[in-house]
Length: 268
Image (cartoon, rainbow, N blue to C red; front, top):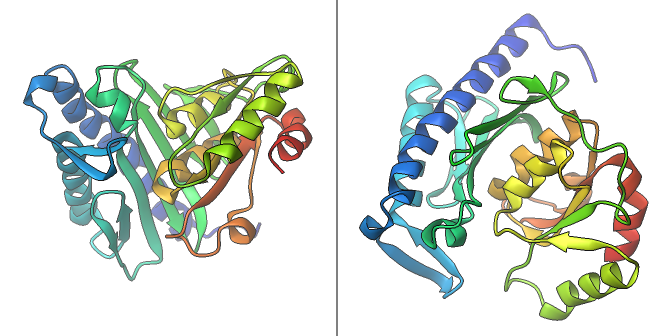
């Protein structure tokens, strides 16, 4: 990768700093709703398992407002309000609450996911778990941290000794997910699904999960997690070859280095 100019590096650093700050701000707002869920209004999107709450909408509105104040020429792609094109070359890709279903049922398995891209490269990734007060953060080429301490993917576990994080939705045939689960269990492996793909990607970056797979995710759910895993020493799918355009979404595979061959075979 060519060396960045000081101006480019400073521009990325400034956005990374803002991403961390607004993740905590948005997390505090979401946490107030989480602790007072009787105030939530909830709407169904595509089906009864795909919902959005007033908390999602208000948190995204806050994030967009703060970004527009600081970097008015940046583009923004969010789950709730879609794409606002920009002219700076930078695009923010974010999910105000990943894990809305756990959120509305009082299960502490949700987070905020914020990434910043430049010319299709993910430069900054921040995932914040307000319930646990855990801030996962990465800048390209600078490593990954959890609450300021360096983190690494697991070097001692693969899919036979560690745990695979797994995601599912109604966007793909149920047999596709069932087949992976069957092959994993038959080979002696085990999985967990907590309802937040972004948070499980963060767990991979911290060495808690060996790998993560979901047959289809959108960019706002996983871009921050991709960078975290890579900067923590892991691997992730090549979005340019697997996804096509940013808005389409696609398969997500990511993990510690010694899981790649296993996971690709398991999900092929």
